[in-house]
Image (tube, rainbow, N blue to C red; front, side, top):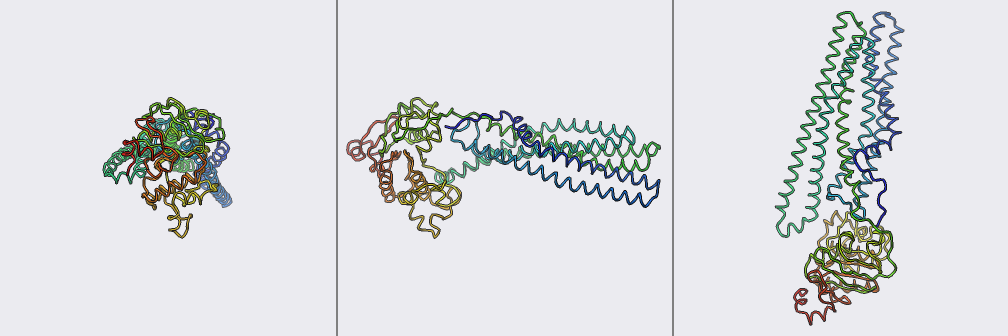
Length: 566
């Protein structure tokens, strides 16, 4: 099975540190440019104050022209530094989000499942929204530093005019950040809960869409809708709570920033009235008081974004740091194709024991559907080998000692509810595009009528989950995919439950013919498939209770006859 990760981030803080370390160069360049932008923005009211000061004192056209040129340089610097600084940071942000999306998706798609209590819909949300929000830290830190630069430049400029003005800016900024940092913790907690509830709602939708047809079949769609409505309502209430907290945070930040700007303006006016500062310095102070609201707003919002990024990173760590359900092996099965189940005890299976020789076609008639499902799960390695007693051997080697990749190449278990993907008939039958038996698989699965029905043939478009195909067509498409894989050992679980009896008879003959010389196991109650098999194993209450050909069992076993007769 695959080598376990050697550098898995253990916590959300590890993920954030990795993201920052990996983008240190882009962040340094972006920080420099955004700092230049903020410095230029701060320099503008300072320059205006100096212009007023010199215009009142010198009244020189040359000095005025020089001042206008200086303003043009400042405006150009502000424009270019913002444009290129944000371009660098957003490129790094997008690239980093892509890296984490791929990594989370890779964990979710690995053959060995992770030991984490999350549904596939939740993993999808983590791989998209949480990855994006975590990568926002790449922009947050440079913007935080550049905003600090603007505040410090303003404080120094005001301090040079009058020390009290500079101290007022510094003390006010510290007070604002202290208040908002406390509030941002509430945002982080609320956001984590909202993300979890939205993810659960998404997982519920995915589950309902998958089981939509069966739900309609037994009238459970209304109850399923009520279940989703309950989960969605919880997510809505939490979203409202987060919006309320964010609104209070934003309103508080804006009010505090406005109070500080008003305090700076009033103090500057008082100092000018008292003759402590000049008119030019008053103009500068009033301009800086108005300008400082924007960097203060940006600066005060950063703790909120940091907490959101941290909450998302912690959710990603749930997936990335989770250990594999089982420790995989490294060996490969020997050439051959025999399959042995030796004393397996799992779920409804009770010391199950049987062997299928290489090249043999064996059918398994399980009287209880749960027994069939448990056997299919064990053979498909959806159940870790250390989670059950006994052993499963392929070509004489224990499943626990084999790598999952090698097992997948050698043994294919095709479930009765196999997924159909958006694409074409061809891409569903042969996803990697390497099979040499596509036409034979199409013919054996009796999918030829579907291909002939459409002008595009195998290139006919298939919607997600096979929405534009009937149940029987989807089942035959899934069977064609399993046959096209042409593995040494093929296990089919109820491959013909949605097709008519005539088609089922033809499929049984075709599968037996196509798979001749290759090991094939069919878990089914279909008389056609049971009759096509070399022998039939009867499973009752998790153990083999009878073994013979289908016709002999029909003649001598009344219980078997009642179970499989249609």
